[in-house]
Image 1 (cartoon, rainbow, N blue to C red):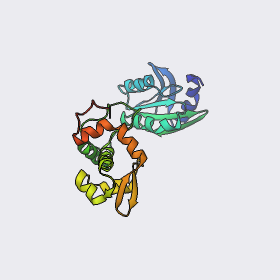
Image 2: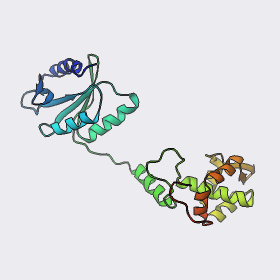
Image 3: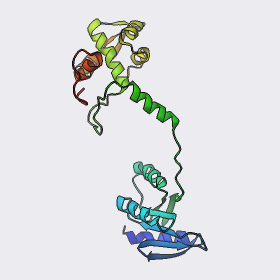
Image 4: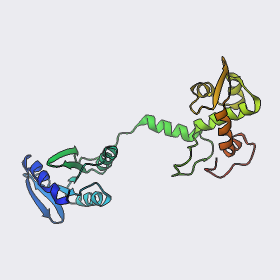
Length: 229
């Protein structure tokens, strides 16, 4: 598909809505005018890209009604592209053959805050001990506050053997000990009998893998550099 292949479907799409449409007007790919309304400007590319986005932002100096038009994006990217364009006040048109699908109109962006996500963000920040992760890293397990609590429990079980949940909670200070042991997200624990848990072979391996982090959490050794535990 060439960029020019997008022109005719978009022109017809706008004309059906009562616009007079012309191509290549003062560096704009498409300009559409209807009565005394602000002109609609459409910038086209075969696919969504940063240059297209920058063109759209530049055209907003001439009109509040600016659309970006491009061929179908990958399904997993579609939502993120629309969210970004809405945040910038840009409309979105996706062109598939002769079909034009409007995904967003160029309206002023009014972000809707997610109080729950904000609360969870600040809670994780407050509960996490130290700064064990290197920002941008993706090839190693993320050291969350939850994983740190699980390591505290595993470390105590490795040294003292199986014990009751209440004792584990008291000696480690991990208030959510019961939930961590019962859910056993990482497979580090095993139920020995009612209310009594021990360390699984997988848990013993995790203690070797995260030895530096556990040492920093328990104060049994000097903390390693961020990201090594």
